[in-house]
Amino acid sequence: MDTPQEHRPGPLSRFFALLGRARPPYAALAVALAFSVAATLVGLVIPLFLKGMVDGFSLSSLGVRQIVLIALAFAGQAVGSAASGYLLTYAGQRTVANLRDLLWRKQLRLSVPFFDGHASGELVSRMNNDTAVLKTLVAENVSGFITGIISVIGAVAILLAMDWRMTAVMLGALPVTALVMVPLGRVMRRVSKGTMDQTARFTEVLSRVLSEIRLVKSSNAEDREYRRGRGAIDALLALGLREGRVQSVISPIMSFVMMGLLVAIIGYGGVRIASGAMSAGELVAFILYLIQIVMPITMITTFFTQLQKARGATESITALLDEPEETERGIGISAQDLPHVFDRFFKADRSRTQANGAGGSGLGLSIVQRIVALHSGTVTAESAGLDRGSCFTVRLPLSPPGASEGPAAGPTARSAASAAPQG
Image (cartoon, rainbow, N blue to C red; front, side, top):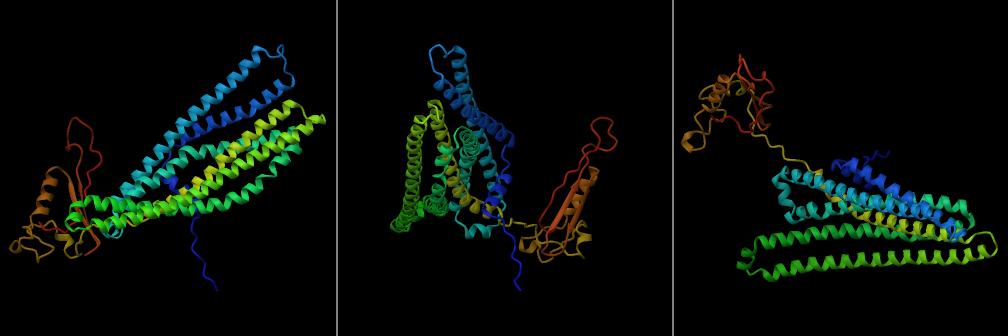
């Protein structure tokens, strides 16, 4: 019988979980998306204005009111885009700052054996390069993806209402484009993951060699380190060229699709106008909506390309954040010694004496207890046993007992010690 496999979250789930841990400013993101959606909706209305102007164009019908409405629509779209751009930049910067704070705090709490097995340059790359990839996705691509979806759906709905036959001709090219773009996105993810890993290794070589340059020169190791660095540079070059090949395929495909659709729609639209089934204004609006569809599709494609890169960065960052932290709390105290740790001249480790210069007198904790008692406080010791750590807790009132003025006694001060009592 097959054993059930442990459920592991998918790449997208890990990505969104990592974003949640980074605590992005959701309010700023929501306002930015609202501005973006408003600008997109205004953009969907503009071709309808132009359609009416073309169909009934005359100098007498072109009034001040129409000109003002069109100018306000363009101005509103520009203001919404500007506000959205700034707020998204703020959200991206804040998110990456929180993520770097998480990584920095985590690295300081990792054990020394972890750093023995991981190069410092690799950890620096995780802090700088990988988080920058996530910032680009949040600040630049998420909004374009959401507004692109809205723009495509809205434009297609309007086009279906205007002329479903021409809309069908236009939509016929999209599945063919998707068949090419999806495999390219998978290749891009693998290339991006390799690039980030190789960048981390190259950063490690640079930081190690430059920080120990005197040792490198005294050891006559310049040629050896040059070959090692050159190998990393060549590997980055190969990955960069591979990414360039993928990008060089994506851009022409999108341009080919757009130009092909434009030619098809203009040609078929001319036939429809000649037969009286479509007006010239509808054809103009159709072309404008085509542009509003193709451009968002480009943004959606860019989003998925950047998402593949972010998935690679997510794997590296999540692996680092999931590393176990150091939990060193000292050697611990045995159960028979614990009740006597505050006794004068008591030593839990009797092998450490003044003779070998490593021990104390056994008075330290008893003096601490006396000083704390003089301040109307208490000190306690806890330990689960030898080699399981110790915790010393000091509790002090915030004001002396019986004080006529000042705040009442409040929270206590707590401190933990890790070493076994030596006096």
